Image 1: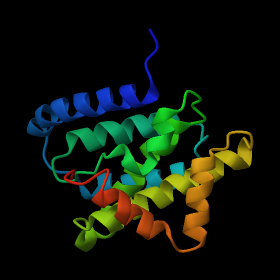
Image 2: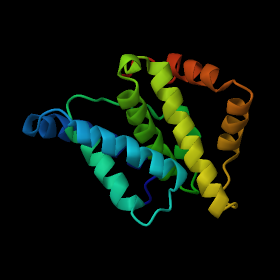
Image 3: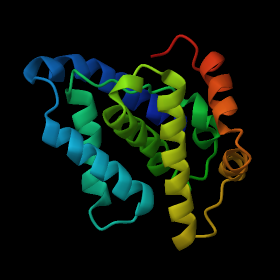
Length: 175
């Protein structure tokens, strides 16, 4: 039985939400050092997704986001939906998880804008696109036409409008 990337991601999101409440009861808010580490890791992963410690960094970041009660990142897959619909992977999970990590880093760096859904998801998407570009530098055959289109939107100053549109339609009601 084959499981699609989208199905797997949705299962992980449901399990994460279920375990999140339990994990949050066991620990307090994130520490200043953890938040600084998270921002640093997000930037490393944006620019060096093939770092020798990347897998460990992603695991730590994911577990940390699940456990901490004071930072909640929008997990709506609508912004990168085509990545979940294709059979070819081309680092789809690396790129989509980077959106969460970069969103969290933005919320930490800009606590006054942490509730601005468009700003947070725009920063997350920009981080995911940086990761995509870093992947292409090492593996140019791993192109996604959808992501190339988002890069063009970014370069034309249209990425914010894309995020606003997805937030209002495919991700409406999600927080």
